[in-house]
Image 1 (cartoon, rainbow, N blue to C red):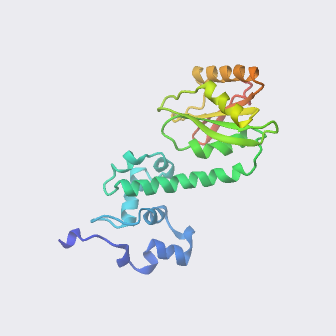
Image 2: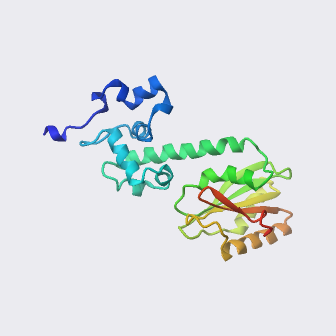
Image 3: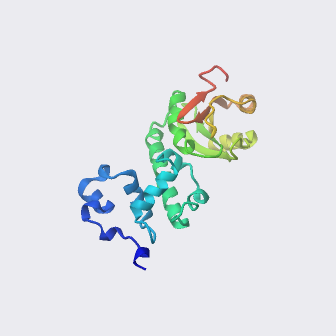
Length: 231
């Protein structure tokens, strides 16, 4: 039965334990596997938390961006990962995404497509499905609200122009920036993307609400309708 004895980090030398290593040497001294081991908390009957974390990263080709795209169902397929560990991993990665978005949000004002990209990218950059977001702005282009208005599948999502402008009226927004991601990595707008942009722009003119831009985000890059003269 000894071969099935649970491997415990407590049995390791102090300098090899992730938590103690963080305390004495600082967080920068930890590998990605060690950081992940702290998040999941424990290993299983055959692997320590660090060994299990190495297996998780190996399953993602040691690419944290690929790990961030996995959902609970993907993670629990990895031997040794149950729902609790999967939830811990996803929660930690989401917190990191929100932290990335926070400094940009403090700018409060959108002055160009790059500002909009930096603001919205953390919300959509690692998603395996398409989501549509809207940045609601006042007359001075200061941020009023950032809202996810639609979530869909791998190849598309539904954008309801009426609901977006209803939100704009309720928020007192006078300018909008449309944003959505392409999980495929293709930055080029589809005919449907162009159609949505055109319809939203025309609807906005009737209510004196300007659609300033439409961003397509993929692989940490973006396509701007405004920069390309398409809006």
